[in-house]
Length: 299
Picture 1 (cartoon, one colour):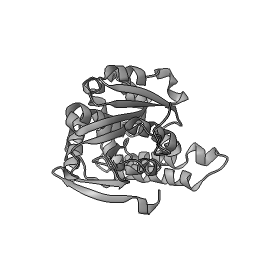
Picture 2 (cartoon, one colour; picture 1 turned 120 degrees about the vertical axis):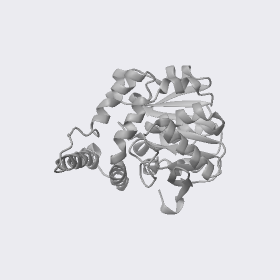
Picture 3 (spheres, one colour; picture 1 turned 90 degrees about the vertical axis):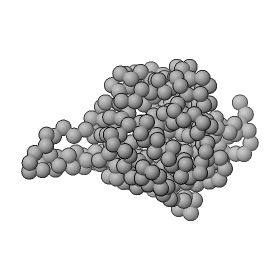
Picture 4 (cartoon, helix red, strand yellow; picture 1 turned 90 degrees about the horizontal axis):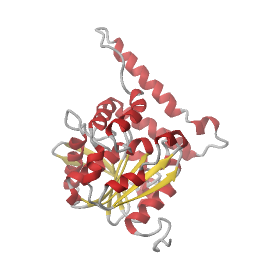
């Protein structure tokens, strides 16, 4: 997005500084990213949402330029940091969109601080929104394993070198995406998307194990059942996860006031490669208007 459309800043809170980027005017909409992503995950989505909202994408504590969260890391603890952020920004009540780790934080906020949430959008690939604790953790485990250090501490520091080598290996996969390697054509945005992910990984890799463990420990199903805010569960469907079965409809059925929707998406890159489709669904739910216009959406 054009640099002049994006404003960056820091909010000082009792638990440390939180970095954010925002665009647009209107009702406030908080955007919460996956781990270890930051506001950069929303760079394609922000200009679309900024036509309708004051869209504020934060760097989750521990990632990007935000200070680390209180230790030990828990989803309720990180959510309390978000409440501090809202207080520091003078925001009493906001709409919230969260993807992957962000949908856990958003769910916790809506469940534990219902007075702070207007409407809620929970976005995730199927593995991320599975309600049942054991099944969701089993689905997330292979992703977590790419970050988890497997090296016993050694007095000469060899474990540090091995861990750093593992970080480099992850970066290689992020750097050389299938689209860059095998796509028929490559656009500047494709390189920018990869660059943003690499930067986020380097800034946040030290905190990712603790954050994933916090996700493992969080009872997402119990949070779902306590959410009263109008909610959109937006499931990102991929062939790689069809074996999990559809989740959004049954999750919506657990809540007091929720609806389900789905988008056929690219694997783990929907916000970067399909921002128009995501924005269309989000804007239609939050405002009843089409993301491409100021006219009410027709059905």
